[in-house]
Length: 258
Image (cartoon, rainbow, N blue to C red; front, side, top):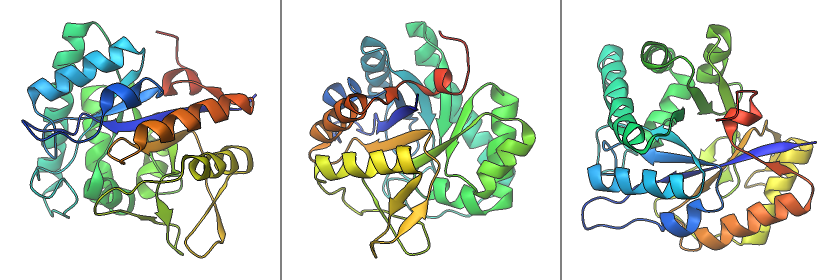
């Protein structure tokens, strides 16, 4: 019986600026990546998003990024690995404070934006991420793409790692995701079709219509798409209609039910 997690980038509003509709989207997710204040999110947003996740029984992960609110964490920043390690621990602590108040546990870490892509290919950044997780809580699951430096280093270090597939983004000919400057609306049925192909056949199409190999432990949906609520509803219901169990990462990777 195939199983899959659906993760959503969430809590990315800031002050009076609203991005996405976490209330409508998270009810269909199983894991929430909540921004931790560096690229988006503020204390009220973080806490409110944690409450929404708790309401729908969604497991919570930290979504740390570069300290780049103006650039939404999508600008590449060169920094000392020890500084990056400290920044990550700081962000993990920020979200866990609210989780502790709400009586729930932190499940995973998924990097945001430029930090996500840089840690996949840079040995120093990957090491900083792993060292931060080991120091803070080695039971946390790291979400990244398969066969990246970060993925392989997590495996070799005994860190739980989940392989992610992006079903609402295009892939280029080299198998890398193409980040949309402003998130576009996607056809929910197309997203479902791509998801089924990824989960069942282990592949996804690129911009040339060719297929690349992927490993799907978790499917990412971006909560800031104009029709994100329709996309994730169609995705969740369609996966389940096709006999795929939608569950959170902790249960999928063999952790205790909590």
